[in-house]
Length: 262
Image 1 (cartoon, rainbow, N blue to C red):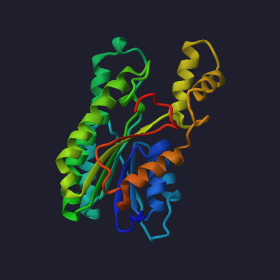
Image 2 (cartoon, rainbow, N blue to C red; image 1 turned 45 degrees about the horizontal axis):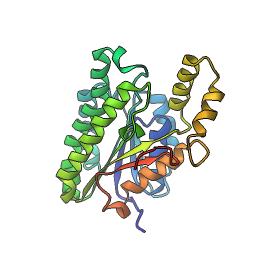
Image 3 (tube, rainbow, N blue to C red; image 1 turned 90 degrees about the horizontal axis):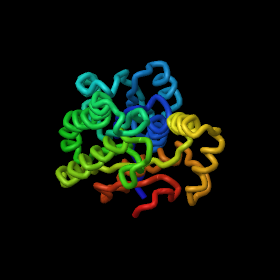
Image 4 (tube, rainbow, N blue to C red; image 1 turned 30 degrees about the vertical axis):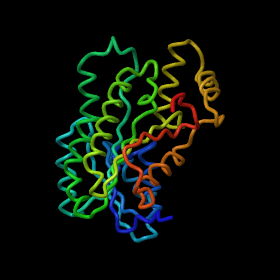
């Protein structure tokens, strides 16, 4: 099985912590040169220091805010003047606020669409020409199992993630013949700061403890436990590898079997 990403460059968004950082680590282990992008420069520096360099990679970072799509695009264009081609794009950004959808101000929806969809679209427009030239490209979007089964209390996320998933499927149909795949990976209950935040909000709303919310959530997972970020990162890294060249346009849950749909 060819998992070698030597001589490939990857851009991983939202990579200062959590799932994004885990993806960056796994891609580096497969030999990729990784560019991590997020808002917090100190955290990005720490992530870069932890990335594998056994293939003599020179990893780097970009400080940018995915809620400002044009700014992100401009900084990535500047990076291309040094990098030439970025073969792998992992679109990822922090989840939007939780709460009932009907109570959500329209401005919050607009912000979420900018951060999750518009930024992804502009980055694809910027990087796909280089992928076509290289006859190799991977676009992976980190979305949510809500693409298959909406999650109560996450109205903005349910709405925007579904938009990203349909955008990705359309793109996969359009550019697959160039040797570029576009896939979505759907994290379930994974042990990250984001999950801790969501469980904390649930506990507060239900006047109970985070431990109780965690216990009830684990009961929904056939695997009987929360996922680890490294497990999620490995799934994304596989989709980015040469071995996954015929997997295109899919929504892959990495959730221990929790999602109740096919």
